[in-house]
Length: 278
Ligand SMILES: [Zn+2]
Image (cartoon, rainbow, N blue to C red; front, side, top):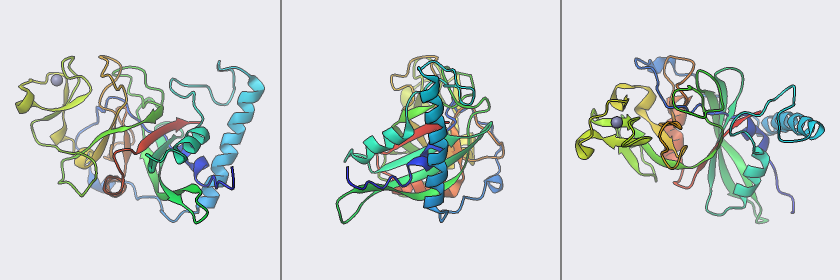
């Protein structure tokens, strides 16, 4: 390859989303939303640090060998068996994908989010630019979701199903599901892992979230395609949504509302979400 600027790759690695079944706690306080990290943060500095971190991991893996976790530093969690840099490289050459939201899971329930936008230089080479970055919170029990109720955030590369919000559509290229008192993130077997309107479906949701009452968390959000076949029990309602007062989620990823709105306004349906722990 020519001179592919692997600019943001590293940064991406850090981002980690908490995507468990978003059993987010109600009564959030918008004012508690964390201040969005400076979008101006030095991309180079981030890249450097990210690459350094990934290098450590790679070295460790190489040294230790196999897929089996034997590293003292970073044990492989469910869904973690992919290389963020490789994924970003692949996506950089995938003309259908123009944005990637990278969530890096850090310590405990803390995370960092980076919204990357693809740019093409005069030489025709593509590159990822950090358009936005901010703090994030993930699931109460950290990353590595495998099942409903584990309050963990899934790791991996995901697509987006829909944008949604209690607030009105801020202008998005995605399908925007307006959250009303009849909207449920269903956890019942019948409509598992789907956002439904109880009046339209006639389904009385006995195991799900009445999303309208989770504000500011669901003021705006994106539904990931975690558990794409809606396999019952594997985990549901893994969203990227706004932060509330709690410094953790039920498995989703929470970011400041300003950043959430920005991403919804800017992204396209083909956007990918990478949730990574390293
Ligand atoms: Zn239901």
